[in-house]
Image 1 (cartoon, rainbow, N blue to C red):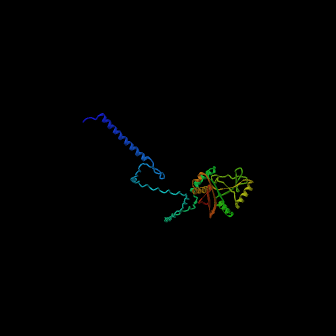
Image 2 (cartoon, rainbow, N blue to C red):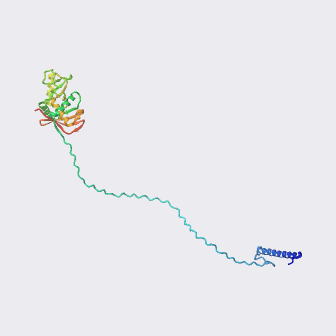
Image 3 (cartoon, rainbow, N blue to C red):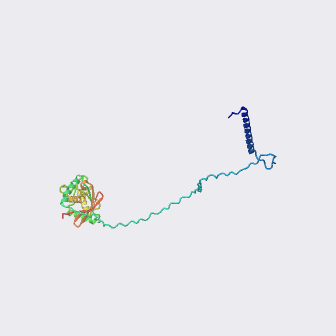
Amino acid sequence: MSEPTSSGRAAVTSTAITVLLAALLMIATTEEAVVQPQPDATTPPTAQHAPPLRLETVRLPPPPALPPTARPTPASPPFEITEAPKPRVQSAPKVEIPEPEPGPVPESVPKAKAVTVAATTVDGREGRILLRQMEVGSGPSVEIAWPDKAFDRDTLHQKFSSCYGMVIAILSNDGQLYRASDPSGIPWDLNPDRYSGFVREASGQQVTAEARILATIRQQHGLGQGTAVRLFPRNVDALMLGGLHRLIGTFLNDGGTVQARYRLNGEIVTITDITVNGVAKLGSVQVPARC
């Protein structure tokens, strides 16, 4: 095959350029027809215009189905403030407590019985110890009152004088004792082994027979002043103190105050209504007589 000449190649190149220009012209005409707006309906058509465009309906595919959305919950209405109900107080149920079954009836505590102590010679020995303590200023303080009634006082005075050896005397201011049986102006020479140094003052309500004896002593010994006293034999006072010691206990050895009252029961003198430091003591003491 022979190669084309240069004139032939020029002719081919010219033809190709002509075809390319024609193609470009067609493309420009087409774009102008698409871009140019259509004339208004009121505008009269021109003698030359581009051919009308054919519009085709383009159907688009349906949109993809969306997932169902949750329906919004309707907003709750605004709350209202209401008064809280008052608490109801319910009464506690009644509980029936069963009555306890009757148990054994406790035995009643027997009341303390009054004890009567009949003083004996054994009590007398203990009484002598207390008597010596009292004579030296120690031991208990003992006060025994006479009866309230005048008849009882006179009867007791007679019993003490005849059966218990009681002596009525006057204690002068200088400490001397005077009796009605002593010579005028001569004091009594007391025997301490026979008579007790537990001297009682004859104070309080008057005893008829005793008042006569005291008047005789004052007149006989010329005593304008002095204290009326009663004295007992030593063994009688020992029996009284010993009986009180057995009834009251060893308290008498430690001192204290004993108050009581004489009472005549038949032929026997009894010490009753006993209190120790103001506390009553049940019981009594009987002092045996010598006649």
